[in-house]
Image 1 (tube, rainbow, N blue to C red):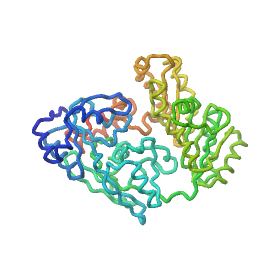
Image 2 (cartoon, helix red, strand yellow):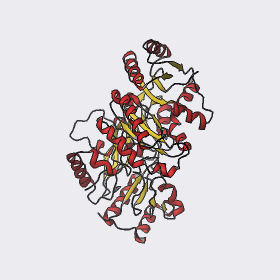
Image 3 (cartoon, rainbow, N blue to C red):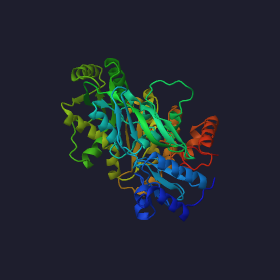
Image 4 (cartoon, rainbow, N blue to C red):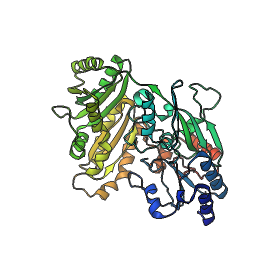
Length: 470
């Protein structure tokens, strides 16, 4: 479906509605909104709109719907698959960063209501100040926004215990493609009155509606938290260790992250004051966090040593040391860029299949790009891996990145062979849009298209993203 170009009349309407300073039309002002973190997608936009509230978003969409203008909703612009930036160069960016008003907390219902533009870090802090916990945690939490977390169904390091963003949302306020406002801001833990509409918008990447407010679940803070950095010899040991820890901790595992030695080497080389907590190197490491006291962690590690699942371990003695452990994990994505080009795969398979995947994926990488450096890491506790690959030393960066599609096709074929997912937590966006016909059955695609058609008949919300219409 062809959309209309932005006209001067449209621009004047938006300036009257929002105020001139919140309608960006100069390319220098627009530039930060079209440059996404991986710098892969670079289409222009004729305009960036920065509404301050739901009513303004509604009026923007009423106008866009009436004049057939394509809109790309954008949060903190931290997405990694290009869902939040234009594709054709004619789409208007609708930035939700100003929807960041007061955060309201109810201790009685253990819930929090905030705007789509509030950052994840702001929400975490507000919960913490109320002596509660919002458990979603991401490396980009200082800049990613709640609306984007919802649109991408963000995962992060706490999924094992608390679930994805989908599991943390109680209610939503959403502006539809035609400007109607759906008020679904409920705090109910149970509501079995027909279809649960909020779940259609969570993970939809802004293709069905624009989230403007959200009510989120909060939790009591764990009374005790203990963290260990463990050396292991093989991913099979990680799977066995996870089973042992879950069994002996009454399922109090809050994080279980796998890190390869090469990743640690990168962080120690490029990170700021990074410290390695163990004496000797090992092929792999597990960052383990329990909602339990240190005595329980020691008891579990003793069993792990006895079973030979762990070869060495360090337990954080204070919050500062715990932060040092987490620094080694959180810096992994950032430091890879300092080693040249990085081809990234965001995949998930059954936890038991992780060792087989890693073994076969390494063979695929070497056969496709000789001497490329696999850097697989991530949330092995829930079966998620960032199967990243750094360019060979000395290879031209662009020559390496040109192999992205070829390598991704082979890795994704392995994932599908193991009945996994090629998009565990980053979404589809532009990057994996062309793969949807390979990973979804005809009936799944047809149902998705019917939902898109019903919610956005003119296809003005984030067109050419997520769901191929033909």
